[in-house]
Length: 379
Image (cartoon, rainbow, N blue to C red; front, side, top):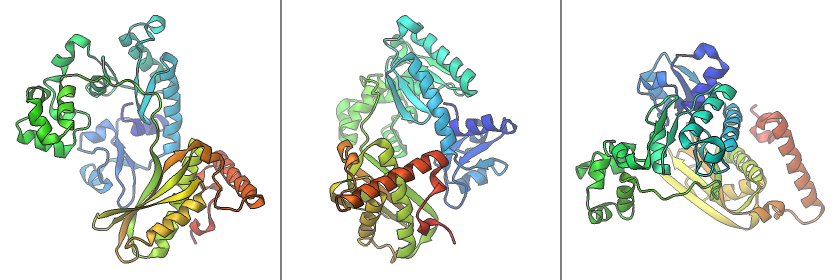
């Protein structure tokens, strides 16, 4: 999708059309989630501190993230994708790989399919999508970014090398600033440069990733479209506008985080056994602590008690904390049905399960904030 979050904001408020719209965390240490193309002309980009974006684009329109609305439109767009093929691999809320190898008999060649998808997305949602058509995931991903917004770039099998070779190495998916700088020191600035370096040299410098980068630079990518990737962990974290300096406020934040993580676990139909606490101090030093439970859980109360125990193994309360996070791994779908293990079996177990199901139903119907622990209600 093209500048998805800002585009949705313009869709819902046409007065924003043609203006620099920036969506993200508005206060304090918030970051940019997405920026319209008008805002990008000022140097605003995703993951940038919001304070920097405000300095670069002082007349921009800064809006908070409305994830519920974005997810609603994302679902409609992905439904359109799945009308053409069942082989859809989501990369994020606004991006996906589609394998249309088996769809030609019904819908025409891949280019025709891409055009139909673009047309249907525009007609049914009012939004634009850019597409890349290519024989591999890697090349299609790069192609989709070449002609934004509302673009369509086609790379036939015989043109893959011709298409890739002039591109700057920064276009390679997965190559960050550090790797890019290391490549530059070797005189590697384009895909053509990289494809000409001996594999042994790249392996010595970058390990196993070196030869893999060379393959990608030559357009070699045998990965298939995977319709559902196994989730390794589910978590949530919060960066605070002001550092936390005492244990009690930290525990309060953990209570909110544990509730959100537990709800996501239940929505996914899983329970986890390993709880990981993430603490980042004000000097950006990051520490993690983990505990493995005897049984699986997706109960926020259990996650909260475990996280509080882990918190005591950190320097929270002694050092200012800028970020806290809770994640859960080591999943079981069976455990999701038996997750109330820390309550005594029988009546208490049954009542607790009814309570959690009722709270989930209320939040599904009326929103996340309709019911919450009293501790989290402001004075």
